[in-house]
Image (tube, rainbow, N blue to C red; front, side, top):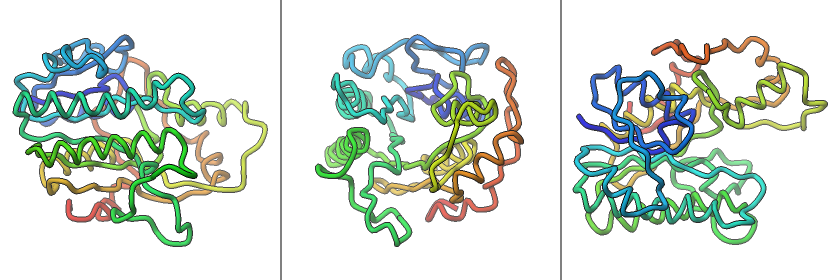
Length: 270
C-alpha cells in the first residue's frame, strides 16, 4: 500500500514511518525543513506545507492512505495565529486534498487536549465533547477545530478516523520533542522543581501501533484515545535516568513497550 505521512519528520512521524516500512508499505514522507527523523530511510521524500493547498494536493496525489500528523504545538497561546492556521486550516487543506485524490482513508492525529477536561473525577473516554470557547487553551481549541474539519470531510464522503494520543514519550526523538526535552532537563537536573500533579503517558511505539490499527480496523468517523498509564510527575522524574537512549542516527526498528499489554484500552481495535 502507498502511504503518505504529513509531519513525517516529527517524533511520532519518524516512528510511524519506520513501522510502516517494516510492514512492507511504500511511504511518502511529507516534510518541511528538518528531516533528521527520516534521513537514510527508504522513503519518497516530498517537501510541502499544509498551508499551501495546491502543493499539498500534489503531494498527496496517488496514495491509498494518509496519516496527518503535521501540527503546531503551543502552550503559550496563539499570538501570531499560526496554531489555528496550521492545525485547523492545514487540516482543512489535507481533507480537501484527500477528497480530490480519492484517498481510501485518512487517519487524523488529534490530541487528548481536543476534548473538554471536565469532569475531572471521571475517566475520559471517546464520548467526551470537543473543547469549545471558554476555559480551553488556544492549542486545545485548534485541535478540536481540526476534528471538526475532518468530520465535515466525512459528511462529504471522506473515509476518516481520528486518534487522540495522550502525552508521548519514547525513542527516535531527534529534535527532541517537548516531552523529550523535559526528560533531558530532568536527567541533567536543569529543572529546580516539579509541580504536585501527573498526566497520562503513552509510549510512541504504542501510539504508532494504535494509529495503524485505526487505519486497518477503525470505524469511519470514530475517535480513539491512545493512552496507557497515569503517572505523577515525581515518578516521571525517577524514571528519566533509566530511560534508554536512542543513537541519533541509529534507532531500533522495534523495541518492547511498557504499555503493550494494555493496548486493549483502545476500544474496538483489539
